Structures are given as C-alpha cells and as structure tokens.
Length: 406
Ligand SMILES: Cc1cc2nc3c(=O)[nH]c(=O)nc-3n(C[C@H](O)[C@H](O)[C@H](O)COP(=O)(O)OP(=O)(O)OC[C@H]3O[C@@H](n4cnc5c(N)ncnc54)[C@H](O)[C@@H]3O)c2cc1C
Image (cartoon, rainbow, N blue to C red; front, side, top):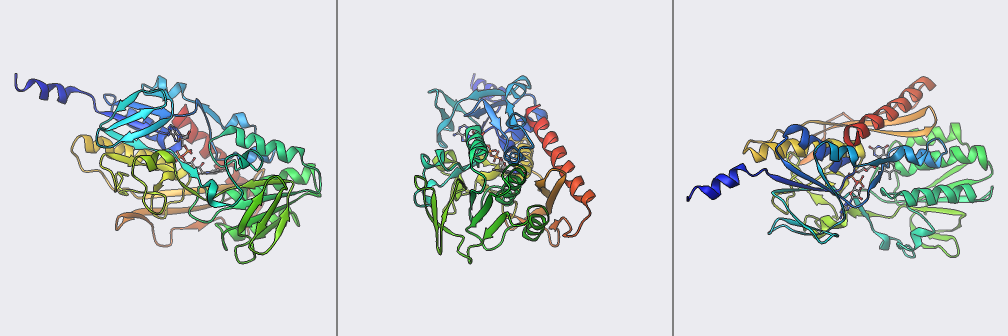
C-alpha cells in the first residue's frame, strides 16, 4: 500500500504548460510533441489567430496581403496539443499553476513562457494605448494595428510626411523599423511620389545601416530621412491630436505616425517573477530555464539570450532548444549545449532583400557571438544577390510557419 501513490506518480504524464503561441511558444509545443508523445502539453494563447510579424512590412508596401500573415491553431490542436484560447492572468510558481482568464487554473510540472514583448507606452510622453489608436505601433501580433497603419498611409495626401519613431536597443527585430521605412517608401513611390518619410531614432547606429542607406539612395532617392540620436532624432513627446512630434532639437508635423515605443518582456513574465531590472528574463543558455524561478523556462523575445537578436528566427530555435532540454530534464538526463545560427532578412523592395547572419554559443552563462561569425550581405552586389535573399526570406517564412502552424 505504501508504494501505491509513488507508482501513480511515476505513471502520470508530466504536464507542460506553454504560455504564448507565437514563433517561440508554438515551436516549443510542436518540438515537445514530436519528442515525446506521452507528455501532457497545453498551449495557452490569448488570440485565436496569430498575425506573424516577419514580412508584415510587405503589407504596408502593398506587396503582401494581411491574410498571408495569419495563422490559426487547429493543426497544433490536431497534432495532440491541448490549445486553450485564453489569456494567462497569473502564475503561482510555488503551487505551480497558471490562472486563465476563463477562471481555470492549469497545474504544471514545467512551465514555458513565450509571451513576446510588452510595449512601454509610458516611454514616450503623450503616447499611450489610447494614442496608439491614432498613431499605431503595429509592433505586436495584433492585426488591427497593422490594418490601421496600412489604411492611414493609403488615406494620407500626397506630399505628407510619415514619421517612424524607432526605439533604442534592445528591442524586437532590430532591422524592423528600417525595413518598414523601405516598404512604405516602395508604396509611396508608386502612389504618392511627393510624400516623405522621416525616421526619428533613439539610436546613433542601426543594424545593416550601410546596406539600408545605400538601398534607399538607389531605390528611393530623397524620400527617407534618418535622424539619429545625436542629430536630434530622440523623441521627447508626441501630440496625436495636433499630429506633431517634438524631438530633443526639433518639431515635426506628420500626416501618419508609426510609433514603436521601448519594450520589455511580456506582462505575464513580470507577474511570474522572472523579469529582472533590465526588463527582460535572464535564462540559462542551455535549458532556457529562468535564473529567477525554478521549473519555469522563458523563450523568444521575452528572454535575455545574450547577443542573440530578438527575432522570430531566434525564437523558433530557442523554443526547440528549450523543448529538447525539458525532455532530457524530465528523464534526469543532462541537456546538451547548442551552437546556434541566426539569420535576419530585410526586404527593401520586391526582389531586393539584405541579410545579416551570425553564430552564437553559450559562454559564461549567456549566448555570445562566435568570433568573426557576423556576416551581412555585401555592400555592392548584383541584383541577382538581392533577389536571391528575397527568395530566401520567403522560403524561411514559409518553412517556419509550416513547422509551427502546419
Ligand atoms: C514589423 C516586424 C517585422 C519583423 N520581421 C522579422 C523577420 O523578418 N525575421 C525575424 O526573424 N523576425 C522578425 N520580427 C521579429 C519577430 O516577429 C519576433 O521576434 C517574434 O515574433 C518573437 O516571437 P515570440 O514567440 O517571442 O513572441 P510573439 O510572436 O509576440 O508571440 C507571443 C504570443 O504570446 C501571446 N501572449 C502574450 N501574453 C499572453 C498571455 N498572458 N496569455 C496568453 N497568450 C499570451 C501573444 O498573443 C502572442 O501570440 C519582426 C517583427 C516586427 C514587429
């Protein structure tokens, strides 16, 4: 009789709860399912439809439809993963439960948090969740924000200015604001050739800067002005009623403003107690287990994964690595350290993309760039090279979304 409860415990399938069904959480759920068909896996996701951000700037450029970015969770459920369309509202790491907006509480043996980012609306004076209804950020998996920005650009008069407010690092998708400027310029070139774009930046340099600046000169001469931090680009305040922005040095009137505020880890990570003073979640680079809470793993943009960029490409790999580590930990085996590759594409025009790739490995507790591994596209390259990168960007997106949602 004394052995009976222990036998029951040994037979019970370990329960893994994953919060967030984007690139990181979705990849983790699929990899766990593929690795072990006995695990009880629940994916908690607030929205029934995921709007994937990679390539979404193409929607603003008029070269993609929003529907090409949208994915549902039916195939994930069909693969044998319990899908709960609900928001996780609280986590009790001692009782090991996740509370949902439905009132249910899910017990877990291991929890994976993949909530992406939270926008710091108070990071810019005059900006707020309400102001984002007039000056959209379009920076999360929220389709309404993309649609709002797209329709504002379509409705603006020729000759108007689109202001893009770009955040300091670290933030989601470092090349994203510049890819966005390129795609909007592509649209304006055909539809509103007198319109201009100004990027008001909280940074002095940005990734693939020389490649972007060269491409803008070639493809959109005179359309995009980039104001760096030192050149007065840092935004002090916005007045969405007056459609004006004040920077440290100047004032700008705009027709459309796309405000990308500073960011931190998604709110549920804060509620779980896995966020540190930086606003992000420190993790072990082998298991992605939180350094602050046992049996809680954090993957994707919410985690602080050393020099790994906050990208869907990284999130997908992190989700898979965490899954592999969890499977081994549940068997009391030592997880394997991995050497990672990251590749980020930016589409500057149809058939014209640039990219930056790098390799990363765990060193002294965090992912560190492997020496001399960062490579960007060549500055001078024939059109065929740019066109090949554009094809690779599409191919990656299609393979990644198929792996998760297909
Ligand atoms: C315009 C743009 C272009 C980009 N282009 C690229 C690119 O070309 N290549 C690339 O690699 N990356 C790109 N990125 C970055 C990429 O989109 C992110 O790095 C990636 O989405 C991060 O994945 P994630 O799973 O961590 O977060 P997300 O994709 O944001 O997913 C998080 C999910 O968690 C859910 N969630 C959050 N909190 C809760 C909760 N409490 N309860 C339930 N569900 C919750 C959200 O609804 C969401 O679905 C781009 C980003 C933007 C904005």
